[in-house]
Length: 150
Image 1: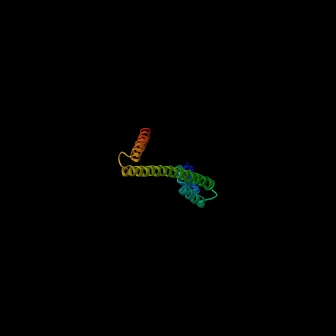
Image 2: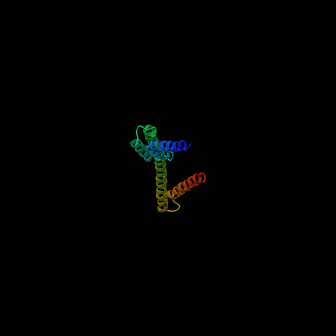
Image 3: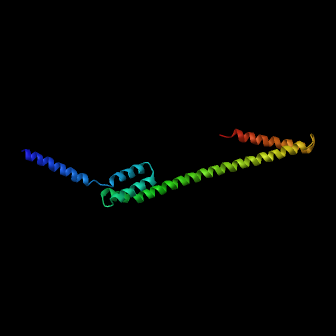
């Protein structure tokens, strides 16, 4: 019986050593690749998959990593495109805001010119009365525009 028990232990140890030696060397980098993919770190994920393939291209993990690379490249491009579209939209909004500010600056310059014309006109003259009336209308428009803002 003692021989039978020793034989079982010996065979078990040999099995563990054989199975331990057959571990898929590509597996750790594949796992890291998948973790990085979940974090949308596609450049790093691609590198990890490439490393996985370099460790053992014929293993199950190596083949899975190889198949993942084009998927990751597509995801990386899609994410880059989405970021570019978001930046384009932001730039368009900034450009529109700038144009609006330019328009407001032009309006202010026009108003300043009108005020200067009125100040140059003598009180009680038709030119003065015309300027005064025009400025009052402009002031009412600005007040209405201000009051209608959200």
